[in-house]
Length: 511
Image (cartoon, rainbow, N blue to C red; front, side, top):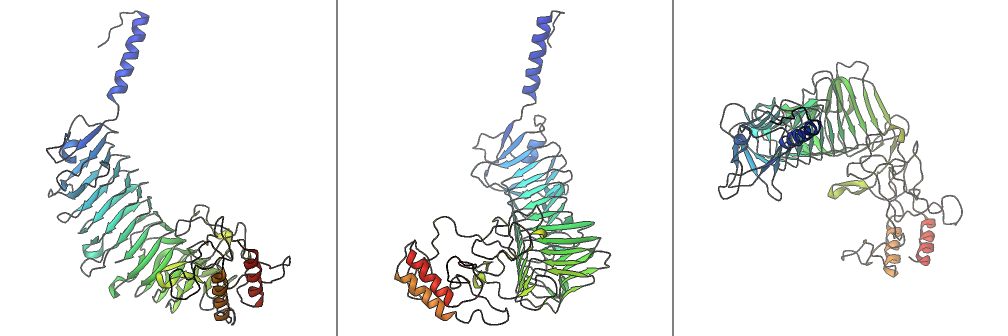
């Protein structure tokens, strides 16, 4: 203890020393956790570390790979960072203790868990968060087929860049991830939809899922999404095939709805509807829905004033006897392969880049490019399903949509070629089947001319019909071949002699 004896200088010195000591005592400390006796560790387990009186709020537990999986039943009472040692992938499994039922139980605000692989234990989960503001990053959850949540996030938590692999729930009543008012971004969920483990991937209230991927099943979302509207932004849902007893990939049971922005649905099938909401709305904005099948696209149970909206979206190759049931629907600026009432809706080929390979981005010349309603794009959706910027103008497409800047329809925004792009350069070789055919190489020669000639002669009828087909670019290059007139160099979806003579012009100009 410092004594000043009433001397002002001594008093100031004592106060300064006490301040320094106080700051030192509260400084954050990093502790090494390793179950390898050969490492210079501080603790041999997380459970041992959190029982130590030296551990303080703000400290970091650095987890080594050690000699193998850690069996943990840790209850964390102070705000900690639990993170993997650099370039290592430590594995944690839930221990055999009855309480807590999970590997890590967070009872402190603002914890961080990072870089850890959680592997299934004896019928228990990985993380349960009883507080808020938890961050989980770069973690992997493997083979959890259990009776409780693999991970449970508290209010206002953040989960990013995590993987859930072959996780499912016995009995189907508890989700793999249970979260509330949280942001889940760039996470992947996949399993094989086993009959014995039909539980949902995720549930909770008022969550936002951004750039996440859901594959396999059993369901992409489930009931208990209570009191609010869950949002999926830039997410992809592929190969989710439900059995008769699983009803719908997305469903709610208490005053809850769903909004999908810039999402891709591919090969999603259900015995009832793709989406079932209770009293709240179901919104699809800038979505691409292909090769899906269900009795309905969406249903609202016990509707109030809420209904459906399908806008700026592309539907192709689906089997929906009825699109909506239970509430009024608003449909506008969609591209479909069947007639749909509403402003801006068209029946035409959206010209996907390579649908046979699962690429549903837009081919140049797609009627979806620059033809959406920009006023329908929420300000918090700056990216498409591929993570590329929205509202990107293609200078050779007519701006046929509503609002400014221009917006494409569907889940993907066409990204025009950058600097150095030569419109006349089309191929490396002109012989079909050989490597480089149809691949630009930065060199303009006769191969490019003969390649265009092949496209032109084989696509002569691609603009025929009442809007059902369109020509990609190339061979569609222009509306008119007369320089200086409106439409010169602007695509129109049809192929004619103007396109041939326009190509001669740009080919002669060179690159």
